[in-house]
Amino acid sequence: MMRSLARPLFLVPAAAALALTSCLETDEKIVLNPDGSGKALVKIRVAGGPDLGIGFGEEAEKPDPGKMARDTAVGLLGGAQGVEAWSDVRYRVDDEGMTEFTGVAYFPDITKFSVGSMDSGGMSSDMGNTRWRMEEAGGVITLSFMPMAGDEDETGAADPPEDIEAEIKKQRMEFRQAKPMMAGIMEGMKSRIAIKVAGEIEETEIFEKKGSNAATVTYTGRQMLDGMEKVLMDDEVMKKLAAEGSMDSKSGDMPPEVMESAFGGEDFRIVFKAGEPIFDYQAEVAEAKAGQSDELKELIEASKQEAEGGEIDMGGSFSFDSDDDEPAGDPDPGFEAAARKHLGSLAPSFTAKNGNEIKAVVDSIGKMENDGKEGSAEIEVSFSHGDKTEKLTVTAFFSKDGDDWEASGFSAGGLPDFLGEGLDPVHAVSAWVKKE
Image 1 (cartoon, rainbow, N blue to C red):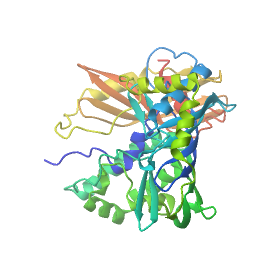
Image 2 (cartoon, rainbow, N blue to C red; image 1 turned 120 degrees about the vertical axis):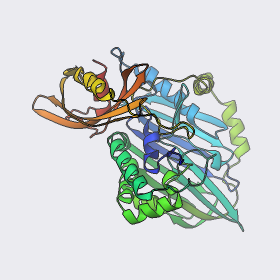
Image 3 (cartoon, rainbow, N blue to C red; image 1 turned 135 degrees about the vertical axis):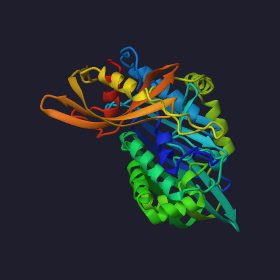
């Protein structure tokens, strides 16, 4: 029997986007030596922090900006990979309410270096993750990276599906279901990388050359989402990907067709002729470690403990991974009635974070499905304040506990300026469902 897809290609960003933020901006200024060692001035801005989620329960306490900024710094330090030392780490909540983290990261091998992920209590988000590749041949170095990369320990494509047309239809359906959530989060994602290499650049792809040894690139979550959708609706390309087994990339890497559609090139790539090292890596690492403040040492230690912590309740999060040996169960005929009963009990109004009273009306309940253990329902909801009304597509998720179905969370997508009042739709829906 053919196994189910463990990681559908067009839902990879959705799995990464099950982060604890609906907005993430990363800016990295990298200086790279020819042996792969280097340093990066990192600036990361996120909306909210690692304690913000969507779920049910008692009214959440108002966040403490200082604690939120510190917790975000701890999560980002814990999520960073391949970093030997940190220096000049700072964190704050800026005037726009964004949590801002800055610091200088020293790494011995760029192919193992990544920042932008966040670890918190055993939960890892790969939303801002990049995976670098570096190859040398005859003194010429090819440097490239994959955005929102998956697990580097799993590579290659999966086995082609037995029924290609059915699998394409399934992927399209699942993408449509997840798109509101992905759009709500990926709309706010933006990454910029500026890199200075030890040598003369001979060619670039997607990167823009900025001098003999420097290049920059900026890319957004919106580009990725639009690129995926364009490829997804192309029958010819989809049949080719299915035949190659590329519709279920084990590593989470996007195939060239998606990269080309999203970013205008098959790879983020720089080719340069290796020169002399730009700086003394070992000396600067030793200086950075010696100059770490007690506060920074405490943050790093806390990040290690946090990354090793237990599971946390993610509310609206869910996983696309599946156990190959455990087939999905039979649908529960009682699911629809239980879901409708719960959706009918949601509060008719709630207080937004800006203090306004927002009315909420479930206009319609769309597609509902379950596998006997987990279920989901698409609903159209009208939110209004004064003479303004915003309609959102919200997906409600349920899990079965014994004989009863319980709501486990919601996802929502929409414009960041919700109702024209600067409200984030994800946080608005969170406030609504928590009031039940």
